[in-house]
Image (tube, rainbow, N blue to C red; front, top):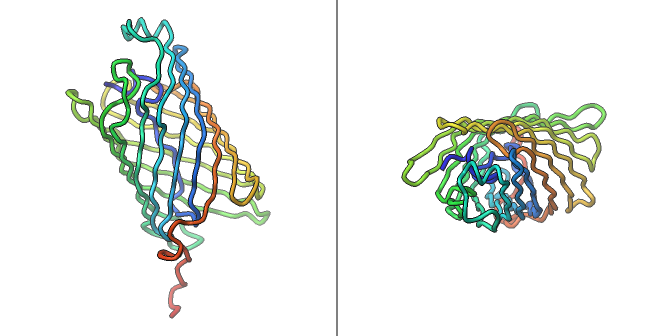
Amino acid sequence: MNPGTMGANALPTFQLEPPWVEDYTLLQVGAATQWGWKGDHSLLPTFRLITPFGRWAEAIFEGAPFEGWWSSPETRDEWKLTTRTEGIAKADIRFGFKVLLADGGEGLPKLAFRGITKATTGKDVESRRFVDGPAYLLEVLLGQRMRSDHGVVIDLCTSVGYWIWQQQETGQNDAVHWAAALTVQPRERLTLAIEARGYIGWQRNDKPIVVALRAGWLFASFFELGATMNVGFVDAPRLEGRLDLRFRLPSLVPLLFKNDPLPPPGSP
């Protein structure tokens, strides 16, 4: 039940996000294809929904409903897989929240807390595709947005947290999850980012490291096309390509929770 010896999507690292809460609902749909170190392939449709509740909290729903996978002869020999060489597995669905803990103003970093739960949706453990058990991520997010005199927007963000999951008779596994990212918006519609993330567990083959390169182009105020290339080091998929359609929709609860900035100190 060790993630490092399972399929490409067994227990992935979590993409870093800034600690602040946006003033729109994000609906993201796309697809990801992965290539393992031994030539294994997989294809997953992906989704993400982030709904803000004012400027201090948001709800998160994400994951993939299923995964199409193909294993290489080397993997089948190493794992002693004699019955199935390919198939469609139920993938992981995750849900959680983020709360902005501290916002000292434009010139100071923001601090937030994020909690995410992995549901017991993943299947095909006998083919080493997914961990069919609950998992929990508890982490602190720290980030700062800066603007240059030429209008370039730069985001610096980092996170560290606790990643826990159950492994049936093997018991609980614990890991420290970490991430750091640099995002640059050189033009109003173009966004470029580089990110490194991973987790360090106590079991063997349980220390994946992923470096991500992302680009996004805002075609309209409500629609962005994003592309990501993830490069895996150590216990992670060797390559993963993602293509996402991101829709910026109105907040679902704008009348109940206004997303206005706090008044300056000393104001009535």
